[in-house]
Length: 81
Image (tube, rainbow, N blue to C red; front, side, top):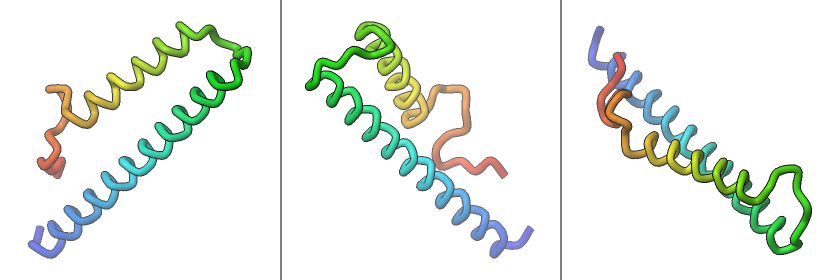
């Protein structure tokens, strides 16, 4: 594999990582907006407040493990190829 192909693979990998970061950021914004809206309007929801808090905390831990590595997956700057 030549250096040009490796460089292209690294660029594609970084673009994919950035796309995933953007998707996650947008999803968090939507989740937070929805939760804040429900709290402000004191709406009845399908799920209890404690259940929603637990679900959001699990999502937060998952995000943190993804961002700061869980010790199992591939390290941030290490290529899978």
